[in-house]
Image (cartoon, rainbow over all chains, first blue to last red):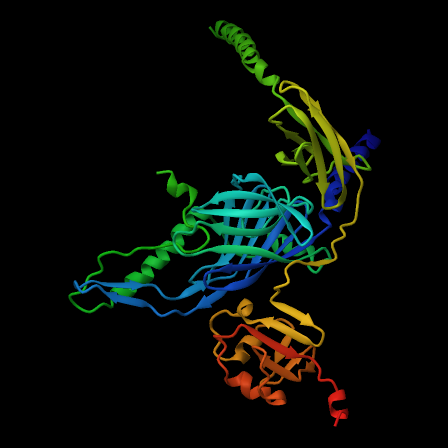
Length: 260
Length: 222
């Protein structure tokens, strides 16, 4: 009876360790992210089962555009751009982003993995010696074109663009009717381990857990409050007739918003 | 009363089972390619990518990741010659030919992958890197580092990794002071670059070149 017990305990300790060696290989991929306003280096670090994506912050003070249409109406378009640094944690079940809000609180925003509906085309392109295949995707209000290489085995890519059977070398938004665009291009790929495996583990980061739907609402409430405060400072006899919020970021529409 | 109820329940159960079986029977015959991926020690390989391609033009038909227990399942779309590639970051790739004879049978393909160290030392993809080194000169693509709140060139230089700017404006790379800073290819002040970096506005810049060390031969040529 004793030896049987020992046998079972031995198995219990052995089994979880079987996958350990597969998680040891870390791949670091540096992307250059560009949009119509700025360009920045972003980094993807991954192993077989998870990935971390680092997006640095960006802030820019822009002048507010004020146009007077002559009928007593004035149009004011917003100025400042303030994008906080984000770290995205992806695994097979969910994507969590560690981010700051305007009130400098740290949040861990959670969203379930929605299987992205990639369409793989039979179009090929060679990028730096890697044979790449073309794929297209519609994601949260934008259309994208990607070139990925099955020669580098990973399902992870820049930002939230996971799910292709190979590393995304280039990803570009196409057909942008609002004048904005977003693109990612690989600059460097390295398997030398610069990072401690700990950075892949969300447990090492502290923040308030929140679901993405609630987080988007929170941010919009914060923006609304901000504009209410500035509207309250308008001179007498002026009235705000309409406030339009245009999302110019990567994600323009969310799934739950189209399900009305 | 309870005896009657349990009798009905058992009968219903039987009917349900038969009904389910009949209903599912056609589903049991869908075509599928499935199997298990293991390593040389027969331990399951999870998160390996399995891709089904047509032999004719290598177009991708379907793909999947192996589960925690190393299993995968793919649905072929056409009959004919195909091949499966099994790949993983920690193992050598394996290719297996598959012939899909009809779309009604399940094909089982199990593979064993050999462990392999990932060998991707450092591959630099684009030639338009934000920082390029050409012999003694470091060429910096200013726009890649601009955050928008830089006033003068010095503010921008402070953001470049590997570069340190001291309070008096001395620029050092790896603790070695630089000799020259050139803006858009023009060398204005030689060692007096501090006037330049402390006053020139950062906004319109495209490239900044930094000369790491000044060749002493120049002094000898007089």
